[in-house]
Length: 306
Image (cartoon, rainbow, N blue to C red; front, side):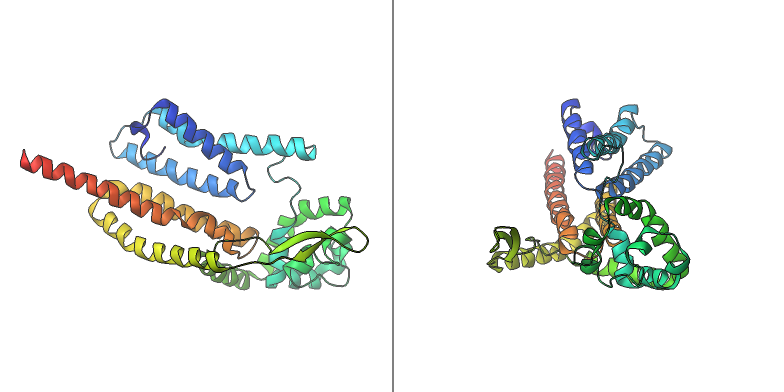
C-alpha cells in the first residue's frame, strides 16, 4: 500500500487492507508492530511528497486503514470476550514476568514490596518467583495464587512496576534488552508447541503428558531458513545499491522484522517462534527483487534492440 499503490486495483487494495487489519488483530504484539510500521510508511510517503512525487489522498488513507481497523477489531473482540473495551484484554503479565526473570523487576520488588501497595506484593509478600514459568504457570505462579481481582490489579499495575524497575536499574535493563534483541533476531527455528498432549490421569482429570516428537523436518526447515536468509541479504544489498526505487520496500520489511524482535523481547521474552513468523519475509523479498530485476533487464534488452 505504501510502495505499490498505483499498481493495484481498488479491489486488491481493499483486500490487502482487510488482511492487514486481521493480522493486526490476531495477536497482542501485532498492535505496536503495526503502529510502528504504519508510522514509518507514512513518514516515507511524507518525504516522497516533499520531494515532488504526488501522493494521492487515497494512499494516505489506505496506509493508515489497516492499523485503525485492526485496533477497532481488537477493542471489539476484547469487549465481547471479557466484557470491557480494551486493547490488551485479560492477558497474563508477561512483561512483568520477563522483568522479574531478568533481574530488575525482582530486585525492585524485593527491595520495595514492604512499603508498596501493589497487588503482586500481596500475592508474594516474601519474594517473587525467579523464572517466567514459575512466576506465571507453576504451582506457586500468579495463575494459581492470585485471585481474579488480584490478577486484574496486577495487569493494571504491570507497566508501572516495569517502568519503576527500569528507572531503578536503567543500565542493567537496557543492557539486557539490547542483548536479548540481538539473540531474538537470530532465533527463528520453527516452533512446534510444547511437545505435550492432554491425557486423563487415574482420577479422570485432564493433564499434560510428554508427546512423541520427531524433530527431523523441523531441523530441515530451520536449516533452510538460515540458508535462505544468508543468501538473501547480499542480494538485497545489491538491490539497494543499483535499484533505488526498491529501497522503501526493503526499509519497511527490514524495519518490521527488527521491530517484531524488539516488541516481543520487551513485552515477553526470547522465543524462536516470534521471529520465525516474520523471518521468511527476507527470502520472499529477495525473490521479488530478483524477479523484478530480471523483468527490468528484459525491458532494457528490448529497448536496446529497438
